[in-house]
Amino acid sequence: MRVMPRMSSMELIKKLRDITGSGIVDCKKALSQNNDDIDAAVKWLREKGILKAQKKQDRETNEGVVSFYNNSSNTDFTVCKIKCETDFVAKNDDFLNFAETLSKSIHENNNINNNGTDKDLSDLKVNDKSLSDSLTDLISKIGENIQIVYYKKYLSKNSIFISYLHNKYNSNCSKIGSVVEISTDNQNSALKLVDELKVIAMQISAMKPMGIDEKSINSKIIEDEKDIILKQLNNVPDDKKDQIIEGKLNKFIKENTLLGQSLITDPKKSVNTFLNEISKNNNIKLNIISMDLYTI
Image (cartoon, rainbow, N blue to C red; front, side):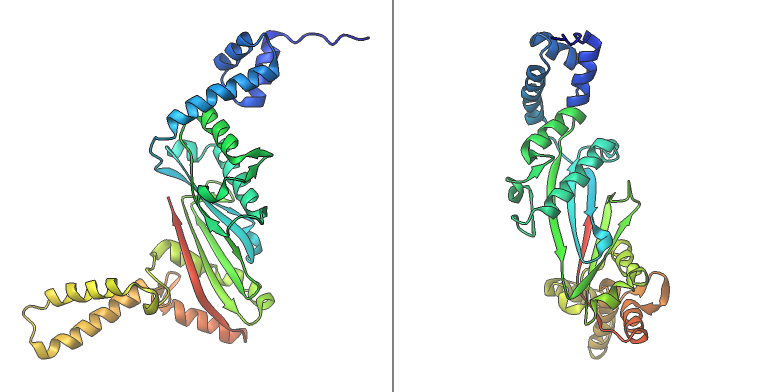
């Protein structure tokens, strides 16, 4: 029977680092505490990591990424918003890889709600581990609190989804992302227009409209704006106030609704005019029915 040569201390430490991502000092201590037994050392580090991670889970998270998975399909993809403590970690490969893997796991799991928070993901597996264990491992490795804030799955047979990531950290992650849903009577033809329609998703990220049109803006916002305008008209005759209020309100609505805004690439056109032109030129119906803006 051939006896396998025993690994040196440095080889054991390197192997343990590769498995756990822990630092050299921690790996050396874990092996020392467990008679150079790799499996026992992994367990020991995880147990210690859980304690460290629990202490970090109360710390504020003000940075992070919006992660898109499979958005190139434009009909079936997932968005996940994940936060960390610093911009340095938000750009870290381990964090970005976790964000992509998590988004993929959410996308491929058909037993969870189509949108929700970490509370809806308690049974999710990430790389064959529970989400809780995966988070604990990552928090222990990078040394910062990490929180899954929100996720949403996009799927439709009657619409296309145009997405945009601004100043991307990699091909799938950024601090600002947007999605616009456009319903259509011909999905296959609409998919050929994705590149042309991309500017509408860019418009959402750049101009941050309050709603698609006047109906989708909270009525209280309109009333508050009306009150502000009225207070600015103290010296205006009463018979002219209504006309001025109407004009200023129309301007406010135009500037704060997606369809009313001037197109960022051609300010002479509104987004509505631009969309109608594409519809007419391609003999297809296109209507914006929802939009989402994700920011960190």
